[in-house]
Image 1 (cartoon, rainbow, N blue to C red):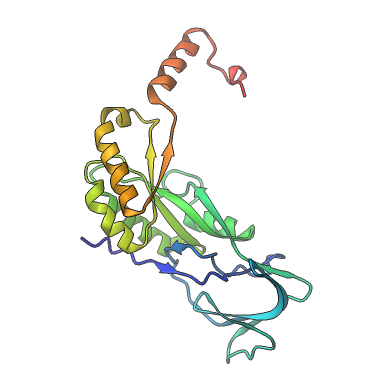
Image 2 (cartoon, helix red, strand yellow; image 1 turned 30 degrees about the horizontal axis):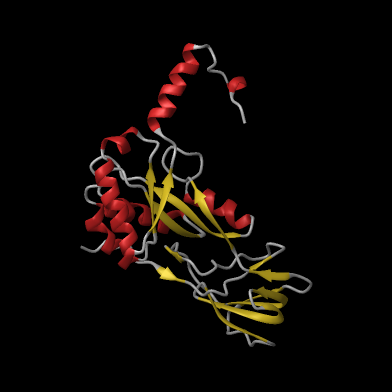
Amino acid sequence: MEPNVPLQRSCPLALVLVALVLVVTLLGATTIRPAQPSAEIVIRNGVIVTVEGQLAADVRIRDHEIAEIGGNLTAAAGAREIDASGMLVLPGGVDPHVHLGGSRADDYTSGSAAALAGGITTISNFVSPREGEGLLDALRRAAEEIRAQAIADVILHPIIGDPGPIPDALEAMTEAGHTSLKVFLVRPTFDHTVPGFMTALRAAGATGLLMMMHCEDAAIISTTGERLMAEGRGSLRHLKR
């Protein structure tokens, strides 16, 4: 079974100008790429900062990836050149936890534009299957939205609602480049299907997928909330840090 969600791995030397002259791409993460036209870009005269140190050099970007770093690079015909004199050229940031799309205020376009404005070149959004929708179908749907809307790179964290089909979908997910899943222990459905979730957790670990856990307890939250409301302590002024 193939999820049909092709992903790409970009160059680990992806860079972004500190003064926000240009945001280039992401720092070594597996992502879904938005559909955008690509032209060669050469960033000149900046001080490049990587894990290996600082280097005064030019950067050539081709097809959304760092193609070359060196001195006095010759730009191809039609290439865009940016003078980064006096600026640092840094790796683009990764925001591992965003909420975009659906009934939220931001979709992938506005959310990724805001990220890029702050030097974040990769965002990680959650995907929750709709009623009757399988995990792989939810990922396909989200990938289509990303390619139509996003202007930054996106990593997807699919949310497990029904743990039953999960073990069968894990191999297709990893082959497509997905690396993580999300489980909400806070939802009452978790308590009703704990054995299935435990099976899914073990299967994800064996496959090498990272399982993110939202660990509040649904029973404790609901009974505590009911008690506070009954005592007349339901307003925000009773919220303690």
